[in-house]
Structures are given as C-alpha cells and as structure tokens.
Amino acid sequence: MEQLKSRVSETSQKITACGYEAGNGMTRLLYTEEWLTAQNLLLSMFEQSGFQAYSDDVGNVYGRLEGTEFPHQVIMSGSHIDTVVNGGNLDGQFGIEAAFIAMQYLKDKHGSPLRTLEVVSLAEEEGSRFPYVFWGSKNIVGIANNDDVVNLTDNNGVGFVDAMQQCGFNFATERTVRKDIKAFIELHIEQGKVLETEGKHLGVVTSIAGQRRYNITLKGEANHAGTTPMGYRKDTVYAFSKICCQSIDKAKAEGDPLVLTFGKVVPKPNTVNVVPGEILFTMDCRHTDKNTLVNISNGIVADIQRICAEMEIECEVDLWMDEDPIPMDPKLVDLIDTTLASKGVNYMRMHSGAGHDAQVFAPRVPTGMLFIPSIAGISHNPAERTELDDLAAGVEALIDVLYALAYK
Image (tube, rainbow, N blue to C red; front, side, top):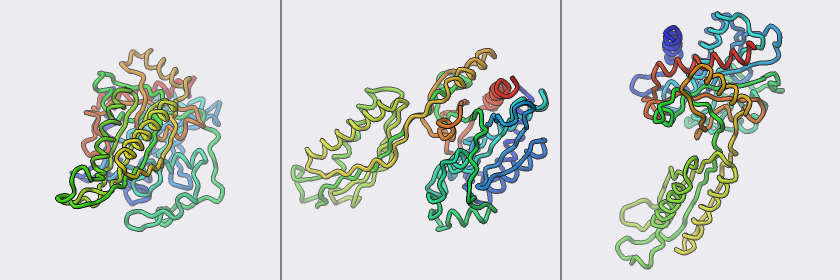
C-alpha cells in the first residue's frame, strides 16, 4: 500500500502540473496548450514504462501491454483528461493515473498479460470548451459524427476544427471503430458523499442514472409593481415558486434514487419595481429506472401546465435531453463484487447520479465502474479531494480486477 501511495502522489504531481493554477484549481480544456501538454506527457510516461504508446486521430492517448495468448481481446481502463473550468485534479485524471499505475504494477509483478491491457486517456468528456460531450469515448465506439462539431466555436470564437488542427489532429475520412475491447473499467471519484457518509472505501457502480433536462418558459404580464393590485397580476415568479415547491415535495416523497433540480432561473425584466412577466427556468430530473423517470417527469410537467392554466400564464416546455439509464454489465459487476469481497474490502453497491464515459461504452462493450470517496462530496471545484489512503485503495482494487480479467 505504501508503494502505491508513493506512485499515486508522484504521478498525480506530474500530470496536475498541466493546467493547475494555485488558488484557481485545474483548467484543462479540449485542444488547448494545457490539454496537449498533458496528453504528450502521458505518451512519454507510457513509453518510458515499456508500454506501446500512441494516439488516435482525435487525440485519445493509449498505453498498451500486448497479450501473449489473446492479443485481440483488450481489457481497457482509464478516463478523461479534460476538466471543467477551475475544477479539481481528480475528476477524470485519477482514473487515468490509477489505470496506468495498476498496469505498471501488474507488468512488474506478473509480466505480460494473457489478454491485452490498455490504459486510455480520453480526449474529452466534460463539454467545458465546446458544447459537445464525450468526444473521446464516442470516437472509440464509432458514434461521433464530424458534422456535429464542425461548426462549433468556443466562447472566444475559436472553431472546434481549428483548435483540433492546431494540436496536430484532424478528422479521419474513415474512422476506425474499436471492435477488440473485451471490457472497459473506469475508476472515478464519487463526486458525492454517499461513500463517506456510509463509511465505505469503495463503491461498485451498478448503473448510471438516466437524465431528462428541460428548458421551461412561463409568459405572464409585466406590469407596474406599485399600481397593479395583487388580484390582477400574472406573476411568473409566483407561478414558478408554486411549481418549484410542489415539484420538489413530490420528488422527496418519491425518494431515492430520484433527484430533481431547478438549477437556472431567469426572470424578466428582473428589476425591483416590475411584476415579472416572463421567466425561464431549467429542470433536471434523474433516476436509474427509465419508466419511473418518464412517469415522474411527465407528471411534473403536467402539474406545471395545470398551475399555469389556473393562473392564466402561458407555458412552453422544451425537453432537450432525454438520456436513458445505463446499467453496467451484470457479469462484470458480479466479478468486481466477488473480487473485492475476497479481499475483505469495505465496499457497497451503488448507482451513479452523474454521467461518465462508462455510459458511452456500456451499451456496446461490457463495462464496469468503481467509485472512491470524495471528501464532503465536493467536485468540479478546486477543493476537490480524496484521502491518499482511499486513492491507493482504489488502485489496489483496480489491480485485482484487471488481474482477474487479463491474467486468468
């Protein structure tokens, strides 16, 4: 364990240097100088450790240990190298570090694997620079479409294609879809505080929650705050307050694993002496069961429409994201469970409320996922932290899982 802790600290310091700014945390966005420096550093680290190091057409970086008996059966592990703006240095990054350290350990102790082991540093997951997510993993499994990104620009007007070309990459005319991946394992910080609260060192992820996201606009009537009697008003903030309270009460009554969030609220004209005649708000609803997710969210939308009709307020509802829940592979979940139990690890089965690259792989490749605790559940924040003992325990668990998959 002490050796793993040392490797974790050393590896993390090297990669964190690419994009970290004291006081502002980590900012490493797709196809920026910080991103390219990190990917090139990983290529060098992989090569120096005796891995076959290479990158693909869009900038995913790989380190490969060829299998001796089944080289075309790849056990892949890793995560994404990009970050949010002013985030932490564990989200995504640690999954890459852990896979690399685990495979180094296995190579040193057991030699070449029977099946090929491959660590991957995925180019992009967050959508922090351009309005597109999972660019790295979607390219690997063949569901990325060049047309979806060719006209995208960042906040500074830099085009997606221009940024890509400046880093030395370009669209392939015929993209190679990976058909050799036998299993994908992603180790990630929880980004919540369930493990910490429950006193567990590891979580075995059984599924990733489905998400439905809405933009909802209410239109009433803007009017003078002093001269418009209360009974004459079509106040959209008042309507929203009713919607918010009733909907969240309904979500609490439903209970876990349902979560419901009204994260963005923009009243208009948003001034002190005018009755707000319009309001835009977002609604984010998540659950691990598709039918429950649809029924609850549809029911809330019906409530919103009823409240608005009673108040003579117009309502426009735009469902702009509708992602199904994604189960992890049951056989892999059982294998991970059995492996951890045999080692006496203090763990629990759980779902993920956040999205991860694992959800892109899972419908196409047998996929499993492990969580390690996040201190106070904080993530996407410079204060993002996990105890070194838990980081090392995550690597140790990953070693055991990869050994079971690649050496037996």
